[in-house]
Length: 276
Image (cartoon, rainbow, N blue to C red; front, side):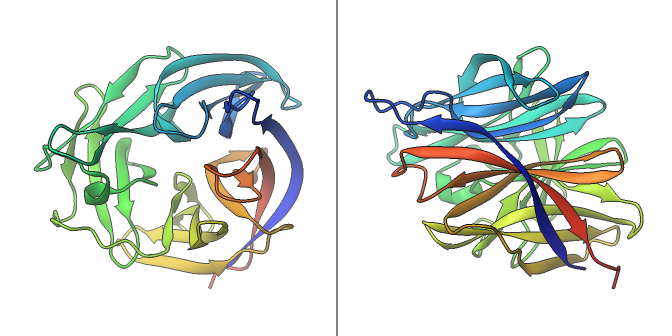
């Protein structure tokens, strides 16, 4: 299976102000909601103290409202049981030394958020569980795929308690390649598979989207780079069906977010070739 990206529009431009903050926020991504869209973005200066804002857009992708909820980075929006959510992670300095992550899920409607606790992992230095988790809804249960390459690592999460248990065997050290997560996985009925788009980190200034799929037997397919209209950092963030078409919000920066002065989100239609 191969995916190609058809550019639909560019929206949610953000520029770095003299203070160092971005005026609107980075990594904006949305989902269809009522007669418009709801989603999240990263607000701040692309540093460790950034926050997650809930955003609402009209049907033409124009911003209607924006409000800060909690600390975090690079949100990924997904829908679970009809409710829009955002997954995020918040780095913090740990008393034992080094940076650790808090992992959070935000209800975009209520703006309440849940702190996740991972079975057998009481302490989460940034290298232990990484980031770029992939939300997956299967049989009305919520899963997060921690890594897809070179092997599949999966957590099953209960949002009522925040407890996440291992669906696959827990590895003390995760091995993560340059092929990393991005959007949630959504079900593609024609292929009877779950599909999503991740980013391949060739360098810190060169990320390319790629297709990943998950079969019901647990087998994973990882595709080649998708063609994009410009060089730079392309990070797929949210994926959704609308009017029988598949769309993806892709965050873009000319260079990595910590060094850039501008960023925006591109909306693409995802076109899939014949099933093979």
